[in-house]
Image (cartoon, rainbow over all chains, first blue to last red; front, top):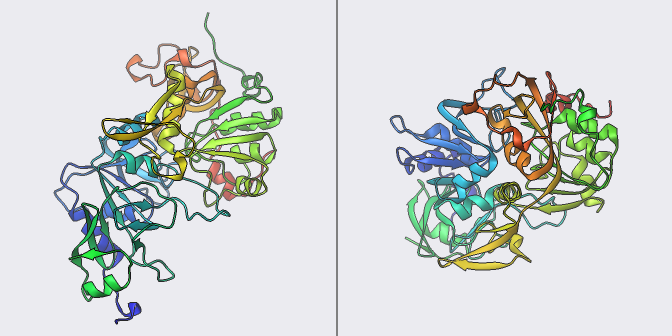
Length: 217
Length: 237
């Protein structure tokens, strides 16, 4: 068995590029906080993609340049951003009407865990000492048809994030469409995990040995 | 004559009473009416229920109101940020109550109150721990949970421009919860960066029509919460 320390797989920028490849020209896309934010910078030239941020902006642009930050122009992660020409501002109820009403095409989220059937856990570790906080994650998975997850295959302590069952509290059940990781791209099809693409140097058997979820090729 | 202009932030918040439910606009610092909140700290009213997306940063604004032990309960979606210290400490000690609400559900519960809708069904939180205790019903082969409107006695809101009728224009993503909180509260109190003459705001550009607003106070140079947090300032100064 190959030691997982010896497998590097894709870099986070390469994973973000894989996600960007699957975002169609003209899509309205919501990006979660953290790794998903990298996707914005990887959209291929010639594609026009409009980014939604749930705190009330459609047409989110690049991060604000140092010295040009505006405390009243932020993204969902409260980072300073810019607005593209053609952007629109709106209040929170309208913003979540876009989400819940099925108007956003794709949402890219981070994950603590994803189950064999596409359940997502990304808001709480279930630790009673943690302050509970949910934000917009549950609304996004309930309202957006296409949920992409971008994550490392293993946690920092080397445990798999893809599991037969999530052990953390769920954000939503049967909601994930595709999981983009440093080791592989995995589609959730009819509640089954199908490996679409393996990163260089990664074998199917290695993946299967490292998760209790059943994988298909 | 209609004149909703108050002469000071203290005059604007003078009617807020012990035990009131107070909505506070803002997404983090963007749109947070920090001068109105500080006036409420000065007033010292207690036992408040606060409805706000977050629970404050550092020791200013909403965090100062909580630290001053004026808040009994907070209804919010995301009370945890890298620089929130006051709320986590009191919550762990069991000295403040939290009702955690998904962000879109929070927004719609506020909007509903302002629109005269007492409750609604939403798919958000189904099959998660946050569905517990909620009535469920299926529509078109999908399960939804019943959520109730959140009514408030007061709303404290920040905007960019206002007139004496209470017509409001916001600035960028500082709009967030402002317009719906104006609708949901019996008494909406607004701090505006600029007060202009009636007629100066193009009716096509009015975001919150004055009917939803009770009081407006001009605060021409509102503080940047993030700068105060960075400087480790505490309110009262």
